[in-house]
Length: 284
Image (cartoon, rainbow, N blue to C red; front, side):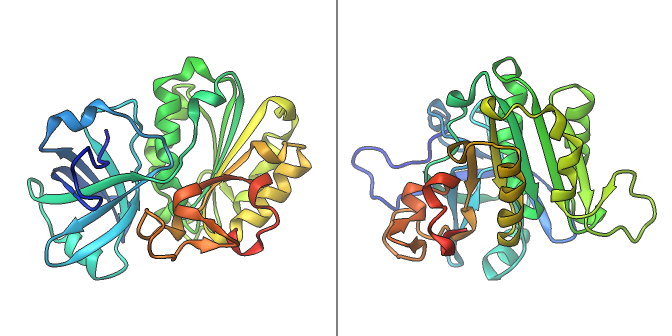
């Protein structure tokens, strides 16, 4: 998939895509599956962790992380939380309706460079949306990676995205998953209760720091404490990868919305190593 502009096209040219499927993931978050009307667009790839801009004529546009992997070229998927006028309009659409997409933007996870390594993937809340692309990439090319640990946290069982899919991947031996919720009021949650960092003791004795890369995405407060746990495990700072997709806006470095400490997040990121940004406190 390459939504990016081709020679002779305007930088803001969009590509129409049809809604193939949609379903509610939580009370306010919905899965969308699209197929481009121009089928030649699927000939090129993107990286997990990149994002696209979705637009609706007469409504506006918004930035969303891509949740499908480049290994699956017949469609493109997103997870969208309803939070404003654009997403209100998007949620009113039906299967078969058309939206317009452009991108991909930013620099994502270079999965090929991680071949032969162990992975610790840590997700919190909506962070599961971009990290789903990483997980599905791993599933499709499982022989390229060693141990893959997935630590996933959510506020409650009802808020955990892709829960059934994650459990199914673990049952098939694709990943080793550990799921946690901050609080369970149902009394029926069969897994861990507590913040996501309380899951680390479940994997600590099997982490080999020199051959491990960590991948993180979640709410801002999560990064500080997850990074502390990873440093305790002696994961090298240049092997702690984080996506700061929440800062994305125009995707082309024009609006300045994402500029912090002289870095344009949308151009240089949203994926950074902890080594690169450890001294820019506002960035994390």
